[in-house]
Image (cartoon, rainbow, N blue to C red; front, side, top):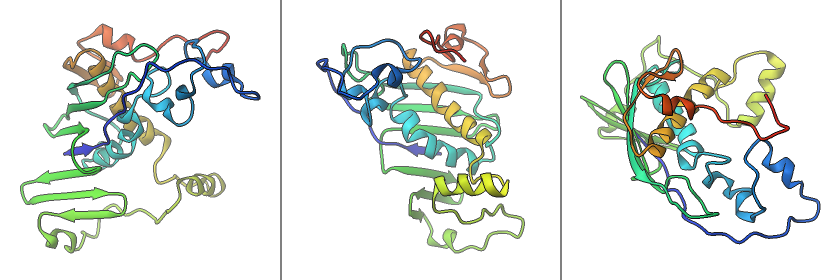
Length: 235
């Protein structure tokens, strides 16, 4: 499988600036490290700073790796190994998340998933009978017949939902599970985070226990699973 994501962005060093009137910079930073105000640290370019986000690996990765894991029945688990290569900018007061990357995950059954910044945005499933590519509003296949073959009677079917926000509110009211549950969302973004940890450790191969949610071969990587909160924030 391939989860094809956009490239990250380069930028910086950015000059500091006065905090705009009416903008609570301290509240914006929250538990993140103290920093001087830079407009590029705010909406929507905050996603290019590891202090607040994880770059395209978490921004788009949470969408496409979710679909990839769903496709192989791994919604409630995850990979057992990850290694990577990529470019992380080292610019003072500038964007620092991966610009280009290739992160390879291995699952217990030997299936591999590659999260890459190359190719058309979407998810590619490859098997012995061909391939299927899915993205928002588009589906393609190596053989068009793959798209018209009827699904078996016991295939998983979801109700139609065209709006994430409305789906959440509806489920608060009707007590049904949303299209993506909190647990599935957690599992999906965890895959993104462990990929970023490998990238930040120079592409290091890490072994992951999806049940314990810990690395089994690298304590430095385990320390990166959390970080201290800036006072007075606490959880």
